[in-house]
Length: 111
Length: 116
Image (cartoon, rainbow over all chains, first blue to last red; front, side):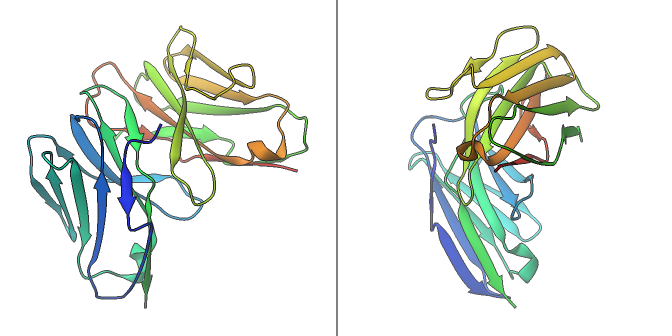
């Protein structure tokens, strides 16, 4: 079952703009992960943030986590056409193996 | 990082055919394999979890006799879609996890199944 809800479901921006995607979840988590998926392709792991972390950066990516609100956000700065993809959050409820995916955000970056 | 491969990457078959999808962990021992299904423009839905040498645990609504999972070794798990029908057309993705894996999740590249 899906735990996470993502919004927006679809986002269309111009190249160079920032893109923000949000993810909410319902139960307590050990960590939260963001993935990218190009159309018809596999998942690419972007970033993992643990429940005791509030913010994490990786290149043009910035992820925040608010465990009190059970929500996370993914910010892509200075977007590029190549960032066009679907983005999913996934929560891990323990330090083991179960991942539960959100519904995803389809991002389109127009050149 | 660890690599998980899937074979085939794309299969087209006639209705009624049984299709086997292989998932291999190439450089680690996957004690647990997860199988997901993804319909177009939708998220991944967990189908089943299998531990090496044990029967798979299926999620609610997933028919175990329809989707046969075998995880006989630490490097290979197979998903067989029996008597496939057009509604089984989907993207199937496996994920491997080892005994000591905590954070990193090793996904296979996925298998696209098209049933005519």
